[in-house]
Image (cartoon, rainbow, N blue to C red):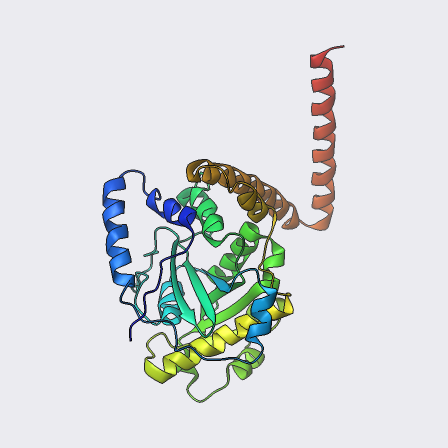
Length: 330
């Protein structure tokens, strides 16, 4: 029998989707109606099954829901991987040099005892994000759609092609969410079929790409591979492998999702309108990004230059404080 799968249980997140394109609210509403009618006949992620320890883990969680956030460079296969996890084509996915995904989108399904939310993201992690998202509104929506925080961030990269753009995407992920997100990250390799009969662990261990090995180590060795063309038992098996990794990760974190000051703000603003909530969260994200840019600028300098820059900034701050004191007067 086919099951009804909700887009999302949170009304605020549905409202966020409804004004994601303020230039055409009516068209967005029609698209939302079509979206719901499609999901009503969609199949679940996998047949329900018992996984040892999952009941204890659910007891530690405030809700029987797992939130997965897809991240990575444009063209790595985020949307295709999201579709593979859901077991149906939901996110728009085509082979292009530029991003097909224009805004954050959430779809839901069920695996074993879990409701699973999958959040697909546009180009939020490249060096172009300051141009494509100048007001941080889309990055703010990304935060709100995953609030109170993702249980796992899935960093998607292509097997055999961990490039400078992938490295930039990982820096962008940490700039947006904070360095602590690595403790909740699983590296997902697309094009699993290229492994043939080989082992993913052997591939990572034997890779000559030092940046890739460093990334995997930074993420605690959590890796998984997907063939996004797989169907039937093969597709089901790789979803099960990934979601058991997520279960283990959540168990290791005591049932808590990843969180930071922006997620705390998003939760604290639960009583305000979605528009105001998005505005305030976007402002906080912008402040966070400015701090990251300054920190990155200083870190890229040689040690001697960093010292001089730090001294110069300290002197400038003192001068500004003195000027403010004198202008204010007695």
